Amino acid sequence: MLNYIWAAMIAVGIIFGALNGNMKEVTEAALDSAGEAVSLCIATAGIMALWVGLMEVAESSGLILKLTNMLSPFVSFMFPRLPKRHKARDYISMNIIANILGLGWACTPAGLKAMEELAKLEEERGTPGYAAGGKGILADERKGQNRAGKNGGELSVVTSGKSGRIASNEMCTFLILNISSLQLIPVNMIAYRQQYGSVNPAGIIAPAIVATFISTLVAVVYCKMKDSRKRRE
Image (tube, rainbow, N blue to C red):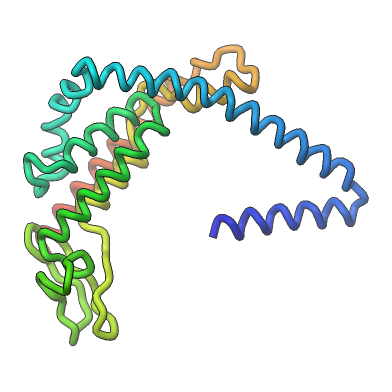
């Protein structure tokens, strides 16, 4: 969908420029923007390399493991039905830590791995759409409605005799936390501000901490409210 939106915006801009006799300006703007994009990528790559390298050092020194253990109570609070020693817990913790440090690039691999492990968990639970070979708990084909599965997992809707995947409670909670994540050092924004000549690139740190703290707090309250409602149902 985004590809269509961007393509439409570009087409409208070119057509509008042509109708108003501003094709020269449109061409110059496109070339200048392309140059700025390359410069920004180079600057961002340097900062990314620095922080990802620091993450590797922190992981090798055992700091990441200590931080993961410190986050264990929070992970247990947000994911009460997630087994204690499940691999997803480690990836979720690493994702949260990377987000807190403002390393959006570094948190992506951990986030993908966490979702992969959560999908395997749904397969182990026998959730339709995840269970291999049609095994596991099946939804009611006649009613075509969702029902609560084992460990509070939600079963998928069956349409025309076929069972599709739906996101589990853990998947939804993780995604919401990932989007609203608290950031102590917004590295991405600092890099952008520095690239575009900000007098104080790091001046965004305090507002970012306040904004992301509020968004994370709202996310936690929302997830727990939805989880509590689902348990009552």
